Image (cartoon, rainbow, N blue to C red; front, side, top):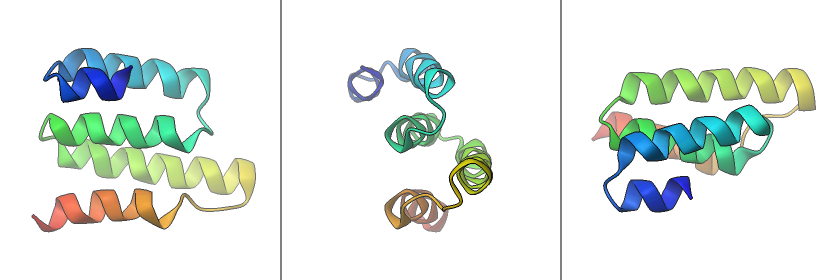
Length: 81
């Protein structure tokens, strides 16, 4: 739902839906990715980077692994452009 709201230009609503999804299941990478996409859609690259860092720390602490390279690349590409 969050992705659809973002695509429709309802970024604020998409952000709220993504926040709810990450609160419900913080270890679900697709929810983290959608939250980061919502921050990027708002033009808030700094918050997208902070969310990626929080995600990296959480995954390392809870799962002993890092998020996928695709998630990292999503933020990296936003920082380059």
